[in-house]
Image 1: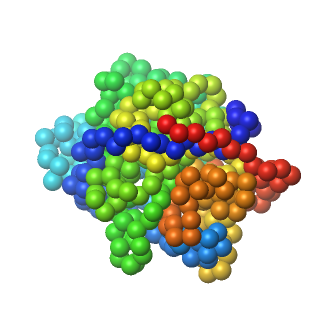
Image 2 (image 1 turned 45 degrees about the vertical axis):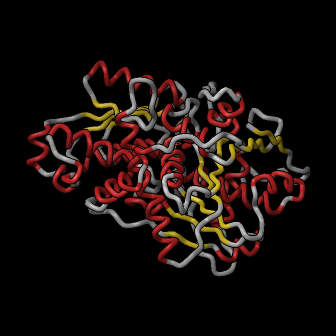
Image 3 (image 1 turned 90 degrees about the vertical axis):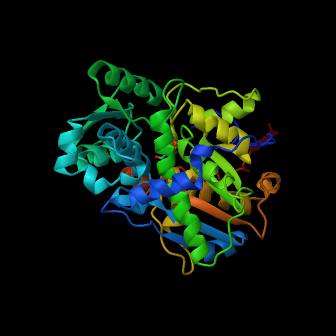
Length: 416
Ligand SMILES: Cc1ncc(COP(=O)(O)O)c(C=O)c1O
Protein backbone atom coordinates (compact mmCIF):
# COMPACT_ATOMS: atom_id res chain seq x y z
CA UNK A 1 0.00 0.00 0.00
CA UNK A 2 1.01 3.61 -0.37
CA UNK A 3 1.72 5.78 -3.35
CA UNK A 4 5.38 6.31 -2.61
CA UNK A 5 8.47 4.30 -3.31
CA UNK A 6 9.83 5.52 0.03
CA UNK A 7 8.64 4.28 3.43
CA UNK A 8 9.23 7.70 4.88
CA UNK A 9 9.42 11.19 3.39
CA UNK A 10 10.59 14.18 5.45
CA UNK A 11 10.75 17.89 4.75
CA UNK A 12 12.66 20.02 7.24
CA UNK A 13 10.92 23.37 7.33
CA UNK A 14 13.11 26.44 7.05
CA UNK A 15 10.19 28.87 6.83
CA UNK A 16 10.46 32.28 8.42
CA UNK A 17 8.27 32.35 11.51
CA UNK A 18 5.49 34.84 10.84
CA UNK A 19 2.69 36.47 12.77
CA UNK A 20 1.42 34.43 15.70
CA UNK A 21 -2.22 33.31 15.50
CA UNK A 22 -4.01 35.45 18.10
CA UNK A 23 -7.17 33.33 17.95
CA UNK A 24 -5.17 30.52 19.57
CA UNK A 25 -4.04 32.53 22.60
CA UNK A 26 -3.90 31.29 26.19
CA UNK A 27 -6.93 33.49 26.98
CA UNK A 28 -8.96 31.74 24.25
CA UNK A 29 -7.79 28.34 25.49
CA UNK A 30 -8.93 29.22 29.00
CA UNK A 31 -12.38 30.18 27.70
CA UNK A 32 -12.71 26.84 25.93
CA UNK A 33 -11.46 24.93 28.98
CA UNK A 34 -13.94 26.75 31.24
CA UNK A 35 -16.72 25.69 28.88
CA UNK A 36 -15.56 22.05 28.75
CA UNK A 37 -15.51 21.98 32.55
CA UNK A 38 -19.27 22.57 32.51
CA UNK A 39 -19.84 19.25 30.70
CA UNK A 40 -20.76 16.59 33.28
CA UNK A 41 -18.40 14.00 31.75
CA UNK A 42 -15.44 16.40 31.77
CA UNK A 43 -12.23 15.13 33.41
CA UNK A 44 -8.71 16.00 32.33
CA UNK A 45 -7.49 13.01 30.33
CA UNK A 46 -4.41 11.23 31.76
CA UNK A 47 -0.86 12.20 30.87
CA UNK A 48 1.55 9.30 31.36
CA UNK A 49 5.31 9.13 31.15
CA UNK A 50 6.61 5.94 29.51
CA UNK A 51 9.95 5.75 31.26
CA UNK A 52 10.85 2.23 30.27
CA UNK A 53 10.11 2.79 26.59
CA UNK A 54 12.06 6.07 26.66
CA UNK A 55 15.07 4.26 28.16
CA UNK A 56 14.77 1.45 25.64
CA UNK A 57 14.64 3.82 22.68
CA UNK A 58 17.37 6.08 24.03
CA UNK A 59 15.49 9.33 24.64
CA UNK A 60 15.05 11.23 27.90
CA UNK A 61 11.26 11.16 28.01
CA UNK A 62 8.09 10.01 26.26
CA UNK A 63 4.87 11.61 27.46
CA UNK A 64 1.52 10.38 26.20
CA UNK A 65 -1.63 12.45 26.56
CA UNK A 66 -4.33 9.79 26.41
CA UNK A 67 -7.33 11.25 24.61
CA UNK A 68 -8.96 7.85 24.25
CA UNK A 69 -10.39 8.71 27.67
CA UNK A 70 -12.09 11.96 26.53
CA UNK A 71 -15.77 12.11 27.54
CA UNK A 72 -15.97 8.32 27.15
CA UNK A 73 -15.89 8.81 23.34
CA UNK A 74 -12.51 7.16 22.56
CA UNK A 75 -11.11 10.26 20.81
CA UNK A 76 -10.35 13.96 21.41
CA UNK A 77 -12.65 15.33 18.74
CA UNK A 78 -15.69 16.30 20.83
CA UNK A 79 -13.59 19.10 22.34
CA UNK A 80 -14.05 21.02 19.09
CA UNK A 81 -17.60 20.11 18.07
CA UNK A 82 -19.14 20.77 21.49
CA UNK A 83 -17.48 24.17 21.75
CA UNK A 84 -18.64 25.22 18.28
CA UNK A 85 -22.23 24.05 18.87
CA UNK A 86 -22.33 25.84 22.22
CA UNK A 87 -21.10 29.04 20.56
CA UNK A 88 -23.76 28.75 17.83
CA UNK A 89 -26.57 28.27 20.35
CA UNK A 90 -25.29 30.96 22.69
CA UNK A 91 -25.20 33.47 19.81
CA UNK A 92 -28.86 32.69 19.11
CA UNK A 93 -29.65 33.32 22.77
CA UNK A 94 -27.54 36.49 22.96
CA UNK A 95 -25.28 35.02 25.68
CA UNK A 96 -21.70 36.15 26.26
CA UNK A 97 -18.69 33.81 26.29
CA UNK A 98 -18.65 34.03 30.08
CA UNK A 99 -22.14 32.54 30.14
CA UNK A 100 -21.25 29.51 28.03
CA UNK A 101 -22.48 26.62 30.14
CA UNK A 102 -23.28 23.19 28.77
CA UNK A 103 -25.78 22.48 31.57
CA UNK A 104 -27.74 25.65 30.81
CA UNK A 105 -27.56 25.24 27.02
CA UNK A 106 -29.08 21.76 27.32
CA UNK A 107 -31.84 22.91 29.70
CA UNK A 108 -35.49 22.98 28.54
CA UNK A 109 -35.46 26.78 28.88
CA UNK A 110 -32.47 27.24 26.56
CA UNK A 111 -33.87 24.68 24.10
CA UNK A 112 -37.17 26.48 23.93
CA UNK A 113 -35.50 29.84 23.32
CA UNK A 114 -33.07 28.49 20.70
CA UNK A 115 -35.65 26.34 18.91
CA UNK A 116 -34.89 23.08 17.13
CA UNK A 117 -31.51 23.11 15.39
CA UNK A 118 -30.13 20.41 13.09
CA UNK A 119 -26.35 20.27 12.95
CA UNK A 120 -24.79 18.58 9.94
CA UNK A 121 -21.25 17.46 9.32
CA UNK A 122 -19.00 15.18 7.30
CA UNK A 123 -16.51 13.03 9.14
CA UNK A 124 -14.16 10.10 8.93
CA UNK A 125 -15.65 9.07 12.26
CA UNK A 126 -14.37 10.80 15.37
CA UNK A 127 -15.52 14.36 14.66
CA UNK A 128 -18.97 13.13 13.65
CA UNK A 129 -19.32 11.18 16.87
CA UNK A 130 -18.40 14.29 18.86
CA UNK A 131 -21.02 16.35 17.02
CA UNK A 132 -23.68 13.62 17.27
CA UNK A 133 -23.05 13.10 20.99
CA UNK A 134 -22.92 16.83 21.76
CA UNK A 135 -26.03 17.65 19.71
CA UNK A 136 -28.10 14.97 21.45
CA UNK A 137 -26.91 16.10 24.86
CA UNK A 138 -27.93 19.66 23.92
CA UNK A 139 -31.37 18.37 22.94
CA UNK A 140 -30.68 19.10 19.26
CA UNK A 141 -30.42 16.98 16.13
CA UNK A 142 -27.40 15.91 14.08
CA UNK A 143 -26.99 14.41 10.61
CA UNK A 144 -23.56 12.91 9.95
CA UNK A 145 -22.17 11.92 6.51
CA UNK A 146 -19.26 9.47 6.25
CA UNK A 147 -17.07 8.59 3.25
CA UNK A 148 -17.27 5.26 1.45
CA UNK A 149 -15.35 2.45 3.09
CA UNK A 150 -15.99 3.73 6.64
CA UNK A 151 -15.72 0.91 9.20
CA UNK A 152 -19.18 -0.21 10.36
CA UNK A 153 -18.19 0.25 14.02
CA UNK A 154 -17.73 3.98 13.39
CA UNK A 155 -21.23 4.24 11.88
CA UNK A 156 -22.76 2.23 14.74
CA UNK A 157 -21.41 4.41 17.56
CA UNK A 158 -22.81 7.53 15.87
CA UNK A 159 -26.22 5.91 15.39
CA UNK A 160 -26.22 4.77 19.02
CA UNK A 161 -26.32 8.45 20.07
CA UNK A 162 -29.69 8.67 18.29
CA UNK A 163 -28.32 10.76 15.40
CA UNK A 164 -28.47 9.93 11.71
CA UNK A 165 -25.27 8.50 10.18
CA UNK A 166 -25.17 8.07 6.40
CA UNK A 167 -22.32 6.49 4.43
CA UNK A 168 -21.81 8.09 0.99
CA UNK A 169 -20.21 6.75 -2.19
CA UNK A 170 -17.54 9.47 -2.11
CA UNK A 171 -14.16 10.19 -0.56
CA UNK A 172 -13.82 12.44 2.50
CA UNK A 173 -13.49 15.78 0.71
CA UNK A 174 -16.49 15.17 -1.58
CA UNK A 175 -18.47 14.10 1.48
CA UNK A 176 -17.66 17.49 3.04
CA UNK A 177 -19.04 19.19 -0.08
CA UNK A 178 -22.21 17.11 0.24
CA UNK A 179 -22.70 18.14 3.88
CA UNK A 180 -22.23 21.76 2.84
CA UNK A 181 -24.89 21.42 0.12
CA UNK A 182 -27.34 19.75 2.52
CA UNK A 183 -26.84 22.56 5.03
CA UNK A 184 -27.73 25.14 2.36
CA UNK A 185 -30.70 23.19 0.97
CA UNK A 186 -32.28 22.35 4.31
CA UNK A 187 -31.31 25.27 6.51
CA UNK A 188 -29.16 23.06 8.74
CA UNK A 189 -26.12 24.31 10.64
CA UNK A 190 -22.82 23.07 9.18
CA UNK A 191 -20.32 22.16 11.93
CA UNK A 192 -17.29 21.27 9.84
CA UNK A 193 -13.82 20.83 11.31
CA UNK A 194 -12.10 22.51 8.37
CA UNK A 195 -12.01 26.05 6.99
CA UNK A 196 -12.15 27.43 3.45
CA UNK A 197 -12.80 30.85 1.87
CA UNK A 198 -16.08 32.07 3.33
CA UNK A 199 -16.25 29.42 6.06
CA UNK A 200 -13.95 30.27 8.95
CA UNK A 201 -16.14 31.07 11.98
CA UNK A 202 -17.14 27.55 13.06
CA UNK A 203 -13.70 26.02 12.36
CA UNK A 204 -12.10 28.80 14.44
CA UNK A 205 -14.24 27.72 17.41
CA UNK A 206 -13.46 24.06 16.75
CA UNK A 207 -9.73 24.77 16.77
CA UNK A 208 -10.08 26.81 19.95
CA UNK A 209 -11.88 23.85 21.54
CA UNK A 210 -8.97 21.53 20.71
CA UNK A 211 -6.61 23.71 22.76
CA UNK A 212 -8.01 22.16 25.97
CA UNK A 213 -5.95 19.07 25.16
CA UNK A 214 -2.57 20.85 25.03
CA UNK A 215 -3.49 23.23 27.84
CA UNK A 216 -4.18 20.27 30.15
CA UNK A 217 -1.07 18.41 28.96
CA UNK A 218 1.27 21.30 29.79
CA UNK A 219 -0.38 21.78 33.19
CA UNK A 220 0.07 18.06 33.91
CA UNK A 221 3.72 18.15 32.81
CA UNK A 222 4.36 21.06 35.16
CA UNK A 223 2.42 19.50 38.06
CA UNK A 224 4.34 16.21 37.67
CA UNK A 225 7.63 18.17 37.70
CA UNK A 226 8.54 16.71 34.33
CA UNK A 227 10.67 18.77 31.99
CA UNK A 228 8.92 20.39 29.03
CA UNK A 229 9.08 18.39 25.80
CA UNK A 230 11.65 19.18 23.12
CA UNK A 231 9.44 17.66 20.38
CA UNK A 232 5.77 17.07 19.75
CA UNK A 233 4.29 14.75 17.14
CA UNK A 234 1.12 16.11 15.53
CA UNK A 235 -0.80 13.72 13.33
CA UNK A 236 -2.59 15.65 10.63
CA UNK A 237 -5.82 15.22 8.68
CA UNK A 238 -7.06 18.63 7.48
CA UNK A 239 -4.67 20.22 9.99
CA UNK A 240 -7.13 21.79 12.47
CA UNK A 241 -5.89 19.80 15.45
CA UNK A 242 -2.15 20.14 14.78
CA UNK A 243 -2.48 23.86 14.01
CA UNK A 244 -4.56 24.49 17.14
CA UNK A 245 -1.93 22.80 19.30
CA UNK A 246 0.98 24.44 17.50
CA UNK A 247 -0.70 27.85 17.59
CA UNK A 248 -1.10 27.55 21.34
CA UNK A 249 2.55 26.51 21.76
CA UNK A 250 4.00 29.35 19.69
CA UNK A 251 1.92 31.94 21.56
CA UNK A 252 3.77 31.11 24.77
CA UNK A 253 7.44 32.06 25.24
CA UNK A 254 8.11 28.93 27.27
CA UNK A 255 6.84 26.51 24.62
CA UNK A 256 7.41 28.31 21.32
CA UNK A 257 10.61 26.39 20.56
CA UNK A 258 9.13 22.91 20.95
CA UNK A 259 9.74 21.21 17.62
CA UNK A 260 6.44 20.23 15.99
CA UNK A 261 6.67 17.28 13.59
CA UNK A 262 3.57 16.97 11.38
CA UNK A 263 2.64 13.39 10.44
CA UNK A 264 0.48 12.21 7.53
CA UNK A 265 -0.13 8.93 5.70
CA UNK A 266 1.33 8.83 2.18
CA UNK A 267 -2.06 8.60 0.48
CA UNK A 268 -3.52 11.64 2.22
CA UNK A 269 -0.47 13.84 2.79
CA UNK A 270 -2.00 17.16 1.72
CA UNK A 271 0.03 19.30 4.12
CA UNK A 272 3.30 17.54 3.23
CA UNK A 273 2.38 17.93 -0.45
CA UNK A 274 1.65 21.64 0.07
CA UNK A 275 5.03 22.14 1.78
CA UNK A 276 6.76 20.22 -1.03
CA UNK A 277 5.42 22.66 -3.65
CA UNK A 278 7.44 25.44 -1.94
CA UNK A 279 5.09 28.19 -3.12
CA UNK A 280 3.54 28.89 0.29
CA UNK A 281 0.08 27.88 -0.92
CA UNK A 282 -2.09 24.99 0.18
CA UNK A 283 -2.56 22.17 -2.30
CA UNK A 284 -5.01 19.30 -2.34
CA UNK A 285 -4.41 15.62 -3.00
CA UNK A 286 -7.17 13.47 -4.52
CA UNK A 287 -8.10 9.85 -4.95
CA UNK A 288 -9.43 7.37 -2.41
CA UNK A 289 -7.08 8.59 0.37
CA UNK A 290 -6.72 4.93 1.39
CA UNK A 291 -4.96 4.42 4.75
CA UNK A 292 -5.56 2.63 8.06
CA UNK A 293 -5.19 6.06 9.71
CA UNK A 294 -8.82 6.90 8.88
CA UNK A 295 -8.81 10.08 10.96
CA UNK A 296 -6.02 11.46 8.77
CA UNK A 297 -7.59 10.51 5.42
CA UNK A 298 -8.23 14.08 4.23
CA UNK A 299 -7.04 15.60 0.97
CA UNK A 300 -7.61 19.35 1.43
CA UNK A 301 -5.84 21.35 4.16
CA UNK A 302 -7.81 23.71 6.38
CA UNK A 303 -7.17 27.28 5.13
CA UNK A 304 -6.48 28.70 8.61
CA UNK A 305 -4.47 25.68 9.74
CA UNK A 306 -2.24 25.55 6.67
CA UNK A 307 -0.80 29.00 7.31
CA UNK A 308 0.08 28.13 10.91
CA UNK A 309 1.60 24.77 9.95
CA UNK A 310 3.54 26.39 7.09
CA UNK A 311 4.95 29.15 9.31
CA UNK A 312 5.70 27.29 12.54
CA UNK A 313 6.15 23.53 11.99
CA UNK A 314 9.62 22.10 12.36
CA UNK A 315 9.13 19.27 9.87
CA UNK A 316 6.55 17.59 7.64
CA UNK A 317 6.51 13.81 7.43
CA UNK A 318 4.62 11.47 5.11
CA UNK A 319 4.74 7.75 5.89
CA UNK A 320 3.48 4.23 5.31
CA UNK A 321 0.72 2.59 7.35
CA UNK A 322 3.09 0.14 9.04
CA UNK A 323 4.49 2.97 11.21
CA UNK A 324 1.04 3.35 12.81
CA UNK A 325 0.63 -0.40 13.28
CA UNK A 326 3.98 -0.57 15.07
CA UNK A 327 2.95 2.24 17.40
CA UNK A 328 -0.31 0.42 18.21
CA UNK A 329 1.61 -2.73 19.13
CA UNK A 330 4.22 -0.88 21.21
CA UNK A 331 1.63 1.01 23.24
CA UNK A 332 -0.65 -2.03 23.59
CA UNK A 333 2.20 -4.24 24.86
CA UNK A 334 4.19 -2.06 27.25
CA UNK A 335 7.48 -3.06 28.82
CA UNK A 336 8.77 -2.61 32.40
CA UNK A 337 6.29 -0.73 34.55
CA UNK A 338 4.93 1.38 31.73
CA UNK A 339 1.12 1.42 31.63
CA UNK A 340 -0.79 -0.11 28.73
CA UNK A 341 -2.32 2.38 26.33
CA UNK A 342 -4.94 1.41 23.81
CA UNK A 343 -4.03 3.49 20.82
CA UNK A 344 -5.74 3.48 17.45
CA UNK A 345 -4.14 4.03 14.06
CA UNK A 346 -4.06 7.84 14.05
CA UNK A 347 -3.12 8.03 17.73
CA UNK A 348 -0.19 5.63 17.51
CA UNK A 349 1.67 6.84 14.45
CA UNK A 350 4.03 9.16 16.35
CA UNK A 351 5.32 6.40 18.63
CA UNK A 352 5.67 4.10 15.64
CA UNK A 353 7.86 6.67 13.89
CA UNK A 354 9.92 7.51 16.99
CA UNK A 355 10.60 3.83 17.70
CA UNK A 356 11.87 3.15 14.19
CA UNK A 357 13.88 6.37 13.99
CA UNK A 358 15.69 5.43 17.19
CA UNK A 359 16.16 1.73 16.36
CA UNK A 360 16.93 1.53 12.67
CA UNK A 361 20.51 2.44 11.75
CA UNK A 362 19.48 3.21 8.18
CA UNK A 363 17.22 6.02 9.46
CA UNK A 364 20.07 7.78 11.33
CA UNK A 365 20.23 10.73 8.87
CA UNK A 366 16.52 11.41 9.43
CA UNK A 367 16.88 11.05 13.20
CA UNK A 368 19.69 13.61 13.17
CA UNK A 369 17.85 16.08 10.98
CA UNK A 370 14.81 15.86 13.23
CA UNK A 371 17.05 16.44 16.25
CA UNK A 372 16.24 13.26 18.17
CA UNK A 373 19.00 12.45 20.67
CA UNK A 374 19.54 11.14 24.21
CA UNK A 375 18.23 14.37 25.75
CA UNK A 376 15.01 14.55 23.69
CA UNK A 377 11.65 14.54 25.40
CA UNK A 378 8.73 13.77 23.15
CA UNK A 379 5.06 14.57 23.66
CA UNK A 380 2.60 12.35 21.81
CA UNK A 381 -1.14 12.98 21.71
CA UNK A 382 -2.93 9.65 21.65
CA UNK A 383 -5.85 11.19 19.82
CA UNK A 384 -7.87 7.97 19.61
CA UNK A 385 -8.29 4.53 21.13
CA UNK A 386 -9.50 1.46 19.24
CA UNK A 387 -12.10 3.32 17.18
CA UNK A 388 -11.91 0.56 14.54
CA UNK A 389 -11.95 -2.52 16.83
CA UNK A 390 -11.61 -5.01 13.98
CA UNK A 391 -8.50 -3.39 12.57
CA UNK A 392 -7.16 -3.05 16.12
CA UNK A 393 -7.43 -6.81 16.58
CA UNK A 394 -6.01 -7.47 13.11
CA UNK A 395 -2.96 -5.40 13.98
CA UNK A 396 -2.43 -6.48 17.60
CA UNK A 397 -3.48 -10.14 17.41
CA UNK A 398 -2.60 -11.04 13.86
CA UNK A 399 0.32 -8.71 13.19
CA UNK A 400 -1.31 -7.07 10.19
CA UNK A 401 0.72 -4.27 8.54
CA UNK A 402 4.07 -5.74 9.63
CA UNK A 403 7.44 -4.07 9.24
CA UNK A 404 9.22 -4.96 6.01
CA UNK A 405 11.83 -6.97 7.94
CA UNK A 406 13.64 -8.38 4.95
CA UNK A 407 14.97 -5.03 3.80
CA UNK A 408 16.22 -1.69 5.05
CA UNK A 409 13.70 1.13 5.40
CA UNK A 410 13.95 3.80 2.73
CA UNK A 411 13.57 7.54 3.13
CA UNK A 412 13.58 10.80 1.22
CA UNK A 413 14.79 13.96 2.93
CA UNK A 414 14.23 17.52 1.69
CA UNK A 415 14.10 21.13 2.89
CA UNK A 416 11.41 23.72 2.36
C1 LIG B 1 -7.82 10.35 15.92
C2 LIG B 1 -7.50 11.55 15.11
N1 LIG B 1 -6.28 12.08 15.21
C3 LIG B 1 -5.93 13.17 14.50
C4 LIG B 1 -6.83 13.78 13.64
C5 LIG B 1 -6.36 14.95 12.81
O1 LIG B 1 -7.06 16.12 13.03
P1 LIG B 1 -7.23 17.19 11.87
O2 LIG B 1 -8.11 16.62 10.82
O3 LIG B 1 -7.82 18.36 12.55
O4 LIG B 1 -5.86 17.46 11.31
C6 LIG B 1 -8.11 13.25 13.51
C7 LIG B 1 -9.10 13.86 12.61
O5 LIG B 1 -10.19 13.37 12.42
C8 LIG B 1 -8.46 12.11 14.27
O6 LIG B 1 -9.68 11.56 14.18
